[in-house]
Length: 389
Image (cartoon, rainbow, N blue to C red; front, side):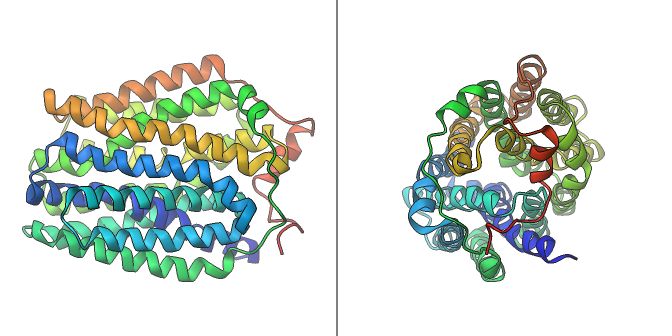
């Protein structure tokens, strides 16, 4: 493995920690917490909403932090905060304290995601999420099987894993040149269709993975089925960069986004139509192989349309847009499911992502800076240049 690929792989532990452990693993612990703490789905969804709120605040603060501390230091600080937030989730059953811990995890996640995307501008970075999902999927269901009171232990284990990820990735986050405070407004205006599609995706996709384990528990799925479903979902996330690297690089922006969002919508609808174990696994595999490719595709579009000195601030703006959708989606989907059935959550994901697919193919056009297309495309996949030292 080349030096720059190994460095990207270590930085990918950022998405493993901030997203795989800090955000998505909650879906595995949720059934046990809901049972022990007597939550309905709206209350459970509010935990992810708190995480999304923290992510929103973190997204607005990251560009300023990166200018003050540097991109590498911002990444490292986010990794440490994520570890602390996961540990804090293990020490209290008090609802406001849990909400606060999930919010801090979201804040740290935004710092890690944005800073890491600047430091490691390759699709390998997004595969780290799958590693976090595989680890949590392999450990948490057996740990909590018939023992829902162990949910604090699950969070403690996640905190330990996040701490290891922070240590391994520490020296891979190297100082970069100063981050400019350029205004992203002009880039965002040019990319407004992408922003709308990204908002719909954020509100839709998060409901599926937040409530997947709760849906399986509602259907009395075995621990083996839950473990297998999550591990396969995580493995699919890990191989997704290899599947989507060329389409993201060469297909027009609206086309790739439409395919990705349409596939996610189909994966959610599939379970609604035929909720048997084999179909659930196919759905999870399809979802896992697709959903993290959407941020990768959006990042590629933003990078192609944004001058380097404005990249961090523009990525921060798009992360804010993403966070707004991600914040609202789980609570609204959970409230809808409380009034109807658990299957409404899957319908929510299918409807919003399906709408996003239609908008993507009809409104999103490729946008590039004045440099040739091949220059913008190659920047996403080549090793870091001399600006990293």
